[in-house]
Image (cartoon, rainbow, N blue to C red; front, side):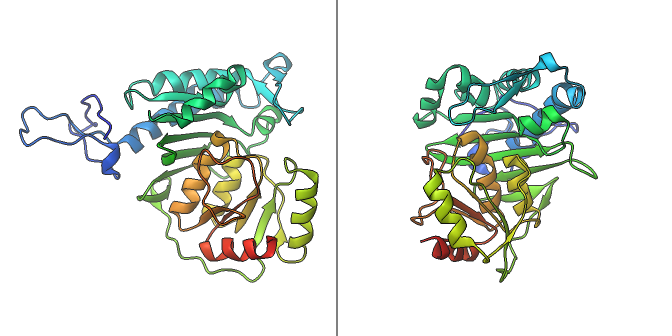
Length: 306
């Protein structure tokens, strides 16, 4: 269990959160116990703060000198902005005492020091941070971008947050916890979606090896309704949770891009699996991966592809 500093909410007390393993345990002696803190709400507040203080003030206000190319293997068109870096610094500082002993694996930190990724294999809890997911959209003033976090330990995503602040008509936040479901702005998502005969989805082939992409496209031809990519994992995964898409297929599995969204989809009753049927995990290597609104649909798509 994670221990937190004693804090109270606005009424002078603190409630026990949704996931007991992420919270302190009150001892029998109520005069001396440590107050349990709702980790989900505490981190949700941090995400809202970074959006209000760092992200949105610069949205559609960036100068050319605020944007630069980023040397990302396999993606020569990748960008980074001053907001990506500032938001990541803000989140690391704000999350510093939320889970004592946790390490931080941020997209921009890994760009500067790739060895940080090895921390994901350690036993310590790890915060995965994507400070601006969909940087190209953000830099161009498009609303399809998000702030994403995931808390990972022992190879399993324990909780995740995906905030899409510029979505119309209003922004939203998707919060998920392992074994505790998925919520959009506090509303629990009920996993009750039938498998459609012509599912709507997006196949992300840009990062696939050419032969794999050609095979996937050929096997799926006329089996689904193609929908355009939003250009950001935060909005792609949210589209499944929100009922706007039935599936997506990815190949490149950078953990900060996929750990938050796969937890949100699976906790909403969906599935995230590789072609061999094994489930996605934050340490999964790059491979064709199906994320679908239901296990039945994921199984059907696997059948089409294998």
